[in-house]
Figure 1 (cartoon, helix red, strand yellow):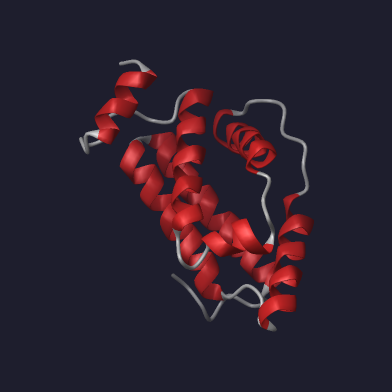
Figure 2: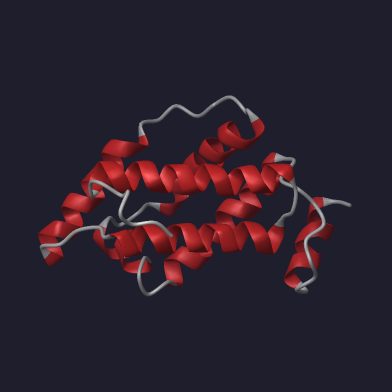
Length: 151
């Protein structure tokens, strides 16, 4: 089955039948995920208004990031934590609170829903596990102890 056929099946709300096998699959995952994030009432404004993400540069970076993690593709060179810490500072300057556990929970929920809608298999499961680890690590570094807060 081609990637186009996979995407058409997903758009028709059929159960996914393929795993994340190619960089095109990674792009489908990333694009679909950020489409959800941008319209989400809890997260969208953080990306579009607070941090004013440049999507034309952010999306290719995320393709590289997830391609490296899931497919062992070379090419990702980045330090994601400082950027996310800066977003927290930007949000704090607006609301005096910053990122909350609920933001991280919602991020993971949208990511897992996106994976489940489009893919099934070992790499899809690994994507969700990796996302949970990323969520927990960033949540711990930005907010503090997450041992009392679990999804």
